[in-house]
Every structure is written in structure tokens, then in C-alpha cells.
Length: 146
Image 1 (tube, rainbow, N blue to C red):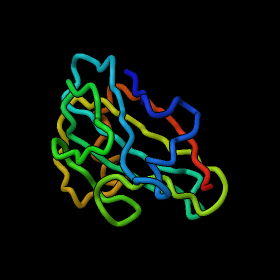
Image 2: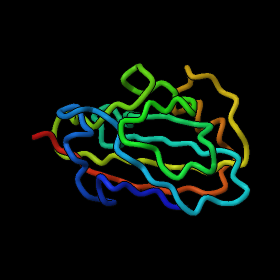
Image 3: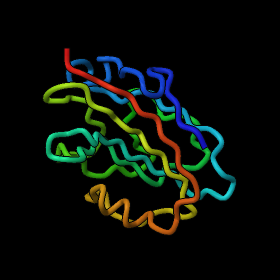
Image 4: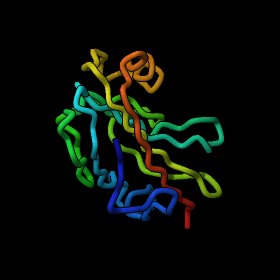
């Protein structure tokens, strides 16, 4: 399975447009080579370089396995979104308080749909996925405030 973006390359800079200093919209993410026995996809976007530990920027699950692209600036009405470290659902772009941070977009192929509420946080999603992950992929971008 692969996750890529036409907006940035793996381990390269995320354009300002997708950050708190720009339009703060989600980048386009393209998905390919999903395993045939996948029942749903889940996405976790986080920043492990945050001063207080891992900062969650986006949580989405129950994405249809035939999804080949998550559109730029999407509202993700076709899937369930959880609560980020911002205290809201939906995408929250990179906004490091200092220095350059790494932002991971982790895609998981699951062999079941998840039955957890939209009020779920990253820990809840990870717990619900345990034992059901059949593949995973990641793309990482970097950002430093200008």
C-alpha cells in the first residue's frame, strides 16, 4: 500500500498553504495498492516533535477501501473524523511553535469497519485498530514557520 501527495514529496517541505500560516487546508493524499481484503482505511496525522509530545493534526476512519484520493481541502463527509489535539474534528495544519517539525500522514488498511464515536481521540482509534491492521503506509513532510 502507498500514500503519496502531489503537494509535497516524502521527507520534503509541506507548502505554507496547508499550514496555520496559509489556508490551513488539508493536502491532497493519493492512495494506491490497497490490499484486496481491506474493509476500511484509517488515517492519523501527527507531529511527534511537539514540545508536549505527540500533537495530533487529523484523525479519520471508516474510509472506503476503494478510495484512491483524499481531495485537497476535503471535508471528509464520507468518513468519520475524530478529535485532534486542537480539541476539534477535521484537519489542523502544521503550526510549530519553534524550529522544523515532522508531520506524518499514516494510512492503515483494516479488515473491519470501526465502531467508535466521532468524539474518539488518537488513543481510542489505535486501540480500536489493534488486531485489524493488515497493511500501513506513511508519508512525512516537514514545516518550519517563516
